[in-house]
Every structure is written in structure tokens, then in C-alpha cells.
Image (cartoon, rainbow, N blue to C red; front, side, top):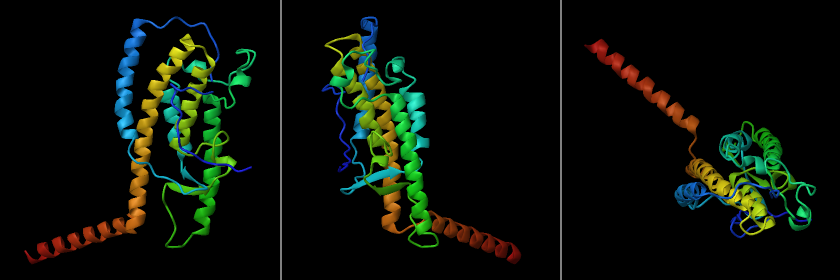
Length: 252
């Protein structure tokens, strides 16, 4: 079975497969005002998000070293801190939402997303260790925070999440599932859209920072520069300055 890696995100408004039906209070005018304010913030984040992102060649996945450590604060302090987060904390069971598994072919929830980030982190760490060992002592050793790995189940959803594009797609899938399964203007739909707006801002900011770091790493590779070389140059410059200053004092 061939595994493919894509970076497209399905918008919540078009809806696809996760949330249970539940009786929640109807949306109030206050909620509508909150949604408008959050939407404006989301628009600002979207502008930053639209900057070109690094792309992987066909059959490869961009895997970020330490992605698990970087992403968990976004999950715990950003997405899961939302007031509706409990709706998406765990997988939806058919006994709670009759017919869910028949309609939703790719369910998603925050517990599963966190597990995939952890699993993906293990796969990336193993690949990074192997790469570093194979290049040990070589001038070609790549200290970049980004690895290009072959597409495999361990580094693509649903089993693994190794970059912010995958994280964004799976979080958006979770909200789209809720919109698709729950009818019309059901309260769960309102809550899913509201939480989506907040999550989109958090992830867009995260992706923007990740792209900046990746672009800087690419620039260093293209220029053939090494931070350690610059550190040596700086050290030599500082030593030379100190020597010249000492000579001036001796002459005086």
C-alpha cells in the first residue's frame, strides 16, 4: 500500500469527519461578539501563515527535530485551554453518538493527536541519531533542525505527526468532523467553529515561527556557513582586539 504525504488543510466550513452530540446552551449574542473578535485575530494570523512554507520532494516528509517538545505547549496551553476543549479531548464512541463510525471515516481527537506527536517524535529521533552517526566526523554533517525522511506510516498521520503542517491538518480535520456529523446549527457546531478560530491562530503563529527557523537553516546550508565558524571568527577577533589594546597600553 502506497503512503502519500500532503499538506492541504480542509477548512471547517466544508466539513469532514469528530465530536459527540450533546445538549449545550444555545449561542448567545456574547458568543457572536467573541467569534467576530477571534475571527479578526485569525485573519491577521492567516496573513503570516500564507508566506511560502518549505516543501518536501515527492516521497519525502519534512520532519522537525524536537517537534514533540515544541508542539506540546501549543497543544496544552493553546488549543486544550479553550473552554470547549473537553468536547474534543477523547475519541468519539458510537454508544455516545450513534452511527458516528459509519459517517466519519477518519476520526480525530486531541488525545490521538498528542499520541501521534509523541510517536512521530520517537521516529524522528531515531532517524536523526542514525543520520548523525553516519556523518560523524564529516564536514557534511547536517546540524539542521529539519530532516527529509522517506514517507512511512511512522511519520505521517494518523500514526505519526512530525511537522506543523501535519498538526494543522489533523486539528482542522477534528473540527471538520464535528461540523459534518452534527446537523445544521447544532450547538456542537457553534462550539467547534468557535474553538477552530482560536486554534487556527495558535497554529498559524507556530507555523510562522517554524518557517522562519527552517528558512534560516536553509540559508546557512546554501551559504555554507556554520555557526561554529562564526563563533571562532568572533573569538579570534576579540583576541586580536585585546592584543592591540595591550600593545597600546604598553606604548603609552
